[in-house]
Length: 495
Image (tube, rainbow, N blue to C red; front, side):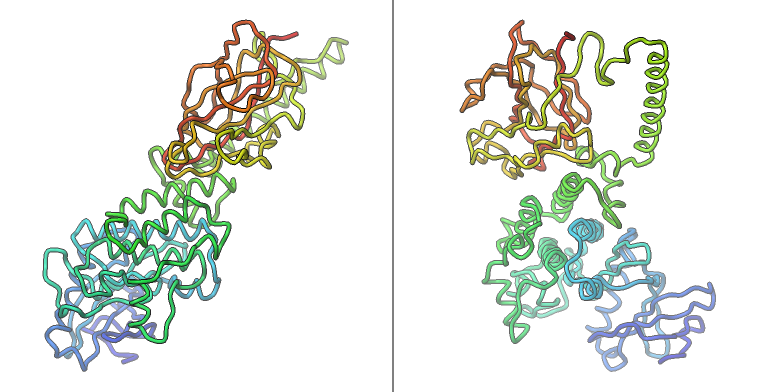
């Protein structure tokens, strides 16, 4: 078929793929002078009414979808007994090829691709179309790094009966949902399961089940538990592992009800991963910058709004330069230098020793990421202290709260506590004590409860009493199940 001109317009130049029903070619559209992809139905099955109808149905299904993460249908036709579909030509590789080439993908990249695939499936489900063959082979990664879903060859409308006989399994068994493997009703939750398996493969570099036959693999999806993704890749967070587990639940009542619910949790997981690492790259950055609502608040500002951060950095540099000029000028006049830069009004920062910050988890294992506590006083917003991830909230772990406290060295009647938070939306209160009480009951509240924002000044009222220890006691967590603090400062009256 190479060199064939279809309908006097599309010249087939190169075979790029082949399946049981059709062959895909890279072709040149001589009318509009552009490259396209042509899917050509095999001649030996084009005379079979059910196969021909399935092929035409793919064209109709895909043509109904207009989405940046779905490969666009341009045209469809028939030439000399050869039915064909014309798609946009995507320069790049399939997601399966990328996994084979790279092995395990970077965690943020894997989640970003899962989000993009999920958004494409959500668009299909909104049109009452179930893909039924979600797998990395049917996801193209274009030259800009975006994921695009293709091959709706066995898709069907939820409003129509399928063309297959009861009990016949359609789809690739490496990714097949248990109900699909058993020949039961296929719904959008079947696509959710397949996407969960795709995410598992991106994170671990391999599919979860293998056997000597496709039927045996399908039965493992029905009967065997999914391998623990954190065991295979320990750096995967508990939050992300929980998403994989819920997406691939064998019982549909325990699985995400819609792909939109899955995407929402994936967006939170990606934002948390970015906040934990302090950086992102590739397609993960593109996805993070497009997040909206509360989830966007989890993403560090330098990722979400890099231009604004650059502008603020330049302003800070300019302000520092001006401050240096003033200090030099005062020094030349023999007058004392300026106050500590973070001082304000009649308040000045309490000088904290390197070992001043400590984690506080009296109702758990007595540890809440103790190795990271010094990050809150290192003058670097890129490093953070964060709580553990509590997917069921603190109440789900039988805790009234967790926190971080600072040792002021001496007793001080602090008046304010300043925070720079990497994750927002959590609820807390500042408490104080002379020693370190073994339970939260031994602390004295010195602030009103507050909800964390990016930058925060918490007014303190010690009623004139001086305390040595000041605790940020976190009592409620946002949907992602974590709180994170980048910087903490304690301010007291001067002198």
